[in-house]
Length: 137
Picture (tube, rainbow, N blue to C red):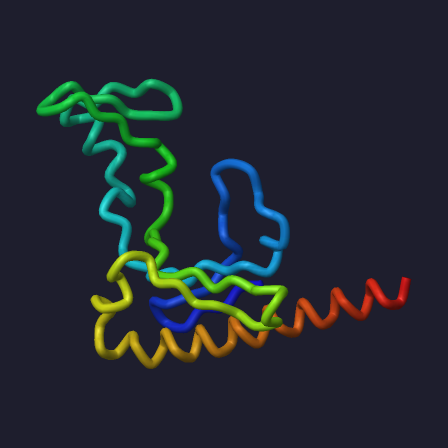
């Protein structure tokens, strides 16, 4: 389940540790923006960063590493909200990440609500489809 309108999108939530039960119905709503590192790998190496294989390292001004994957994509994204299905209420719940929703651009607000509407519908349809399959078997 994925949807994108301009700089706002919804995609499956990525988990760094144990994946919670029922998470197949959770989506992250993200804001895309240009990646400041895209195409800059050679410049960083010229500026004295050391290539450690999967990362670059610099001790100046602070000890810092950057994943080399950071240089590959023209854009990146960050999560502004989570849309989760609640089995008890049989509906979705939207949770903002801190105050990020307050700072999306005016023209992005319309896109946000359209992505939210579409993502909500996708989740509900997936739940209904999965429930029908359970009843079938």
